[in-house]
Length: 352
Image 1 (cartoon, rainbow, N blue to C red):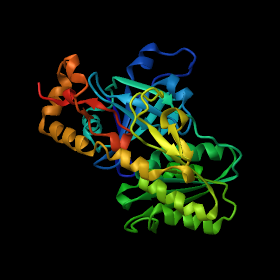
Image 2 (cartoon, one colour; image 1 turned 30 degrees about the vertical axis):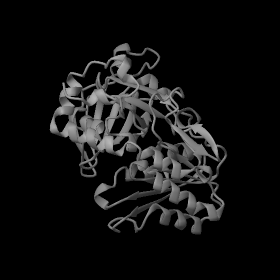
Image 3 (cartoon, one colour; image 1 turned 120 degrees about the vertical axis):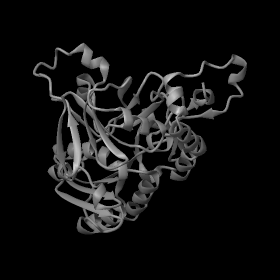
């Protein structure tokens, strides 16, 4: 029976822990099952999954991501690691139910259930360098993955200023976690119900006004928010790193779907990033590419909501004849814009 506790008004379900006193003797069953050992719902759309995988937890570094497959016929969705606990042997993911797959996971991923697959950690870890004073900025879902970076900078001896943004007080999560690793912590809210009224850019300006010796700003969030953050720091000549979220399929540099323009050069976010110098990123190109499959995402979610998506996930259609492959339209399951995404053949979504 899972234990349920309340934290900041949210419900968190946890499975009783195992004895992990000897991490060198890995439980092979745990390493391969990707069991969900805890879940917390922050809002109607945002939820946390803590997945058991001791080996991955020991290897994870701030800034990296994993690729998750919820079930045998599910799409691959890259998700930035929001936290990792080497003692518990777990990886934490914070997910927004925005498309077909993430809503399906919201419904099905409960404590005690398992993911079909989880690959990682992928991507280059964030570089801490010798920064003495940093500002870690998270907006929306970017709040969760900025936490490991704030903690790492603090452990590395830096003075850490945290800036996070939410629409309202009801959506705030992990405030205590951030305050435990930040020397200063600024919450921004659209409606002014918590912290200062305004955007994270207002928080960045406030930090810059109070500190003339900021070495680096790290910003994670929607592309439009990261673009605004870089434009805010540009006049101050402050180094600004951002974590990019382009379309992605394999996560190992083979498909080329995650290419981004940085300083006029093509980079692959999965292997060259996901962290890049924000002042060199072509955000217009990035945002245009992310819009490419909006209609397919919408259609996939509608079909799933009507029930056809659930049926096709349980019984996928057979592959089409070879002669149809070249002319088959490209589609996907509905989470590209939020979680990098995965290209899927149109026949994967047809009725069976």
